[in-house]
Image 1 (spheres, rainbow, N blue to C red):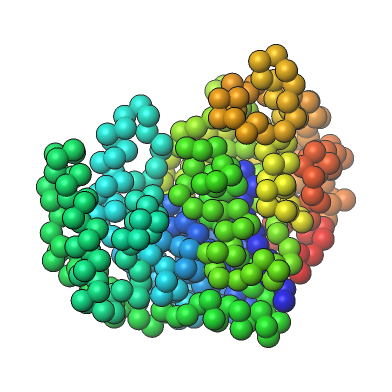
Image 2 (cartoon, rainbow, N blue to C red):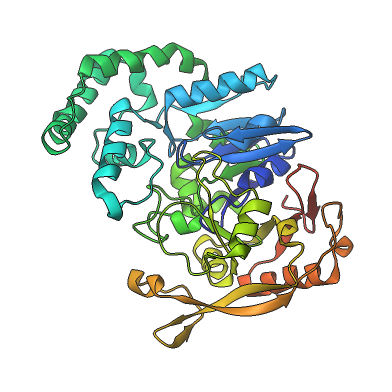
Length: 427
């Protein structure tokens, strides 16, 4: 049962798309198990760049079946638009499977997300405004709309009425907005039913049968460990579980079926949105990382906050995910620095702390303790083996591996599909 989980080991945007795409030719299924179109992956194939927001990266691998699991929240218009865009570029999307138990992002979820964030003002979370959080809230409150509901107009209407009973009160009386008509929402959602029907499937059954047949299944997380609703920097987090445990609930497979858990690490650190970020840079180094690394959100279009590598976070990700391997990305971005700082610990109230503090207050006050590592000037984008890297680049990778607590099995030295050094096979 070769099942692998691949997830972000920082705050997201680590390059999961490249890693998933690299493995896509060797796996039978690639499964998105949480999040929605608030997560974005950029995959470069030859001279073609693909920006994926909701679809699994495996959609670009001809022999692979891409799956959107039950733990994902789906905006039908975004999904259909993304499929159409890929079809126009000659990508075959016919093998996509969509869980009938996945929840639908409705128009009122998007409205509530946007007005709530504006209402919060300076206390805002930094959401993408795409309705992700309100959809997960509806799911927990048991007033959510699932994909399967699109095929029973009576049930769909009842569920929309139940959801809008409360939401319209909030929109009109608290936010001074117009009420949303039930009929309008139902009509829009029913309009997606026929278009989505070819993809809807019992994905839990499909995936478990595939594992029983010794097929290779890759579970792909959106966002990153530090954005996990339970294990991230709450409340500046997403509304689901990108950590490894989320793969089990978000795809419907048991934990005993997971054989490897691969964490994606950027050679430095970035995050999008509000919240604490101990190694964040506000100087020319931070601007250089942003410029050279092309650090702009695939989905949001927002500039990413940039900082040096944080080994405390990497160790935490290893622990909460049970990581067996790391894929280190964007090592090439660090070319040109004479010395590269790496955060090895925090200072909190005058005390050195080497593990991530559980207290939100302590983390907000954490100051990075840096160790300086020698940099390199050589172009590493053509490196094919670890030995091809400059000695200082090799030393940097080995230092990060030792600090992070799991072996680095692959290294990204450029954005292209073939610009990767594979040290140990993931399969």
